Length: 429
Ligand code: UD1
Image (cartoon, rainbow, N blue to C red; front, side, top):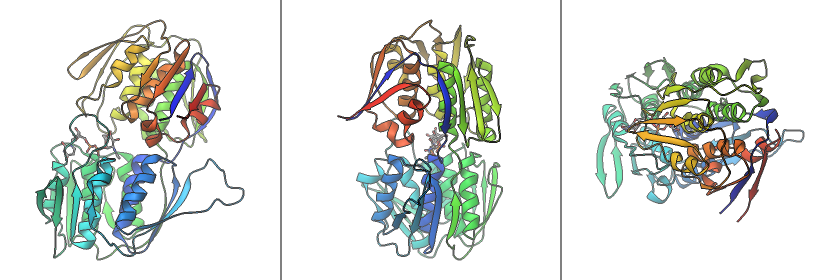
């Protein structure tokens, strides 16, 4: 298994290109199941999760073509993929596949909408507490699907097609909102989704679905209305920039000091996180090309933050912020409100010398003057990148084991950081 070796202490200076968002790419690829025409996605990041979803969709009969590199094209730029679900040959999403990536459960919506049935394994994915699918099932039922659970599989049927309905989510769920949206596009009549997730990736998917002929309004607000249509067509859509990758590198620069342009990044996608980084002592500047982050010499200030659904501070940046606060000049508090048990990075950060105490859903982080390199273990996607951030500022050498978690969500991490002066390399097993 690959490892990443980091020797800390270098400032970061230069440019980091921000990739297309993983959390938009996955539902966009799944939306390709809704039409028998070709959906073309541009700015698709090169990630293990994208490859895995490609395999899962292939199992349903979807052809995915990755466009050949054009001469002169930026070899590091995002890729263009053509998704063609002309014929769906299988409506089962098996355990071996869904258990590897939770988002693949979302195929349930387009499969039922288009084929009238689906048999989808209960999901797996990052080990960050119980992550049920009850609200996704509730949304499908509200649109007329009959649900049965058998042998670890959710079986959904709507032989006469889905019909519009009113879905009121008791808590904000990104996956629930994606599922409801996709299912409603092909349902008969009007669907109202209340307390919808406002995450930018939801709006990006709705934007693409509208290009495919769907009639969705209100995406990006808590109330989305969908007028069902008979069929959807092909379209071309470019994936929005990854706000979590942006925030991660912004925190890395805040941690090490230096001056980095996060190219293609868009500030409105992560304003809450940029505000926190600014309060911590880094300078955040929006430019035509992206976002510049700089910190020169000043101490890091401690912060109190709670995670929240968009537009709040994202849970997917909680571990990275905690890494940053390990070096703050004082005591910080970070409260996780979205996922229980999303604190697996705490023990590993402690191996580098961090002082963190957990009380329920709140971590108290007492800033230390120095971290020291050590072997650490990545446990989930965001936790593992928090260890990278800490290692960049630690004295000496850190090896991060089990980096396949990083490859799921961060494109060419070591190349991007290395180009800005970090001493980082991948050690192949
Ligand atoms: C998505 C993101 C993930 C991010 C999360 C929250 C993708 C591919 N993943 O995950 O990176 O951390 O949003 O921003 O986009 N819940 C239920 N019942 C359900 C569904 C969810 O109780 O049926 C709960 C969850 O346990 C959690 C909360 O709702 O406490 C939010 O989860 P949700 O927004 O659904 O997360 P995902 O869509 O899985």
